[in-house]
Image (cartoon, rainbow, N blue to C red):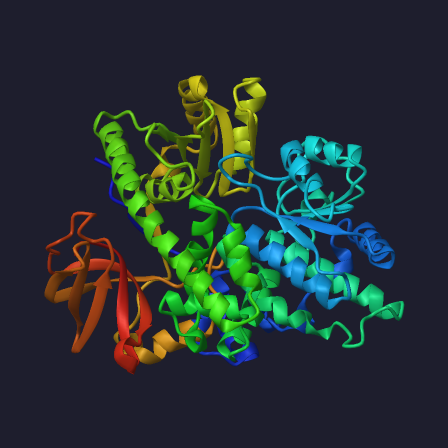
Length: 576
């Protein structure tokens, strides 16, 4: 059996009382912030004015100069994006942003996941060449830092390339006319955690300033770049990049626009089909409701539909596209459910045999290549170790998607395997927590063994034990709606700035299964009766919870039927 997780309390540094006084915030909130690295009130300034100067992003001067020349010459531009939510929002941001700054509306092109694969390839350049009008400048978003062949193919066709990306570079950089990427800097910068959409937004900000200083802004002054912040927020949360101060500010400002009724029609439509009220939107809604619907296009068909939704200018067309994405997402969920069950069963069998490796690779010939990333994430959460899930790409190779845990940079781990075993991996790329790769089908067993060995070099047995890191226990007086509202309003929470979770023992007054897989409970703490919901509890083997029960939970605001109530969202339960 897979070992039960440990419950670990997050350490809280000194200075909580001082932070509470300086920032004029409740002690509980000061404790939560301090435990996430906030040391002063100034770090809580998430206004646009607190953002760093975009000129400090590595490669910005060259990128801005290239775009200014293109604007003056009337150069035909094609944006080449990626087939995930970050790539889609990045593409939409540059298409809209360049138009606002007086450029002719750029063309855009996204590779098909199943035929062309990721990024700017030579094959994608061939497609661009055949488009009408033929582009003269390609601008990549959320890709390109490893596109050596694609950049050379574009240059041979007489096209310049501006690479904008946020992925780690390899040993050499492509021979592009300009490269904008925070990860090419020799030392850390405030931009290091940006998603691709954040890089695109800062490029527009720097370009706008250069045009303003040169007296070249369009009549409206290009001031409407703030209209793009809802797209920036969605792409940033969807890409699960760390919510450092820069990303938290971008997300906070984007969500503020959505709540104020100033979301783009496509984002408003995505929220509507997901059953989310814009005026109460939080970062988790972006990550778990809007982003999956946008990603469904790239996972099952073509991300062009997702980009069209984001670029839609009227509510009617946006709604139609959002409904199409919602239908694709429902189909994706059905496919995922079967794949997830098969993957978890395979992991359980390995665990029972004592053969669960430090890094787990799974493959089934019937799996869908567009859904393996979600499956890897689900299995990773269950077995608490890095997981790579593979599916056939239809051309004799396997396409894999990796998800990692704290302590292992999975893209670097794959790079180490590729270095030790030349020709084993055809291509790869990614981040610390997520990566993608392609390898010949015959190499699966060799890669699986090598990956498990590489992970074992970095993670010992203690790191592979599942755990829930909580913010301790809440006092009985804190178990109320006011606490849930306080936490909700203090966001955004997310990767690297985790949403607060607490643990405690409760008496179970009643429980019942709802929706086949979930458990609705009524708990008691002292004199307080507390409603709770445990999603997926039945699948995890908890259809009948013990009493007392020890749980890890989030206090959330339940607004079902319009009234706001406290609800405990149970993340884990065990005998108390």
